[in-house]
Length: 57
Image (cartoon, rainbow, N blue to C red; front, side, top):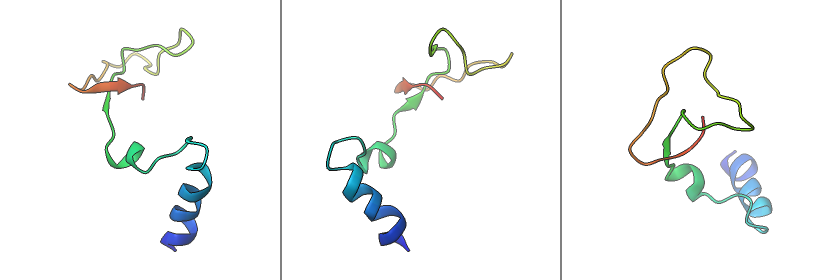
């Protein structure tokens, strides 16, 4: 199951650099104050900001 669902995707998408196992094994923190196309992911909520934040969730 792991080989089929996980390793095959790593093998294919890893060839062009779009997907690396380290992307989700060592994730960076979350910063919900950042905007994506001038839009927020929040709908009236307080933003969550981690110390090592770099991605928008």
